[in-house]
Image 1 (spheres, rainbow, N blue to C red):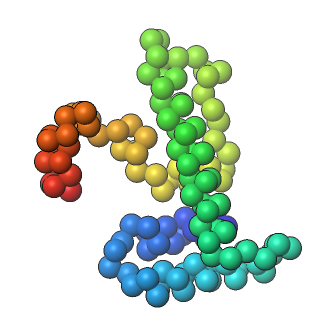
Image 2: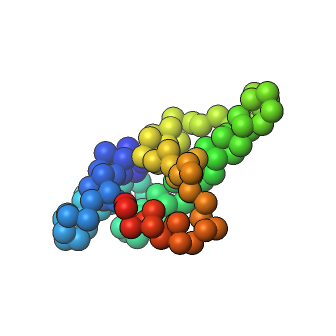
Length: 120
């Protein structure tokens, strides 16, 4: 599931130009592949939820590792959470800014935030 979604991640999540019908077709292809090797029948929404959950947990690990690395002296190695191969695949789809934040942006200053968002 993870490898199929990461292969199509740009089309599924990063482009608004692709019609929803084509995105649904991609999801249907992924569902068919997953169901061909599994014993439990999955639907598109099941795989999407599993993907979002897995991505959320991977992002949390990355953020935890970043916090540990930013401690005085670079933190302790035993505080770092090792990513398994699937988590590494998922991590490759997470923009760095989603983990580190956008440098120079103070979201508490709403006016500056709105100006920043207008430039994106």
